[in-house]
Length: 231
Ligand SMILES: Nc1ncnc2c1ncn2[C@@H]1O[C@H](COP(=O)(O)OP(=O)(O)OP(=O)(O)O)[C@@H](O)[C@H]1O
Image (cartoon, rainbow, N blue to C red):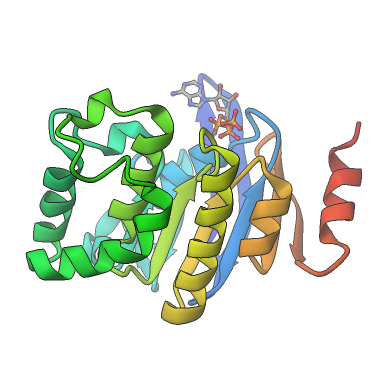
């Protein structure tokens, strides 16, 4: 589904991402972990063509993301609050995103149903603009909007950050359900090792821009990651 070929991103001559090769299969959930500044967000930004690599290419279903808009049809993403529209209510924003994908109001309502537990009565019918929501609730809005089109690929940067413990568990279960029911491929970054392992069948570790490990998750993965990050 996604093929990263020999990408390098450098700022002022300093290389911040350098990945010779990384492939995500259709329906596969890959968790990206790594310490602050490892290059996770920069990698996502290149996958979503928000920034261009200094060298190399990202292909989505065999097409260079920098040379086509086709991938936008089947890719949902939420990296940060800049993806939201501050001056809309949550409902207006979902309608805006729904319209982009040709969804009716009924479709939108139906597709938001699985998010109701996560929303915890704090997202819909609040009569306030997105800019006035808490960081955690803004994140919930962004994730729901990213998933609204039932994308084949969902890219989320630190989806568990800023969420309270109950919301983290609800989100984890929601992501697992979306994977199972819709065979949605996912590319998620997280500093929460246990949650990301529970959602993803494969974990990739980035360190200083380099891919240092690529592993299938199993019952030992959490211990292995904790050992890796214990320095
Ligand atoms: N526009 C930019 N100009 C200069 N340096 C940048 C820019 N964007 C990112 N960087 C640098 O690239 C490196 C990787 O940053 P990035 O945000 O991708 O890391 P990250 O793994 O997402 O970190 P975190 O876990 O803290 O969110 C950092 O050293 C960062 O300072």
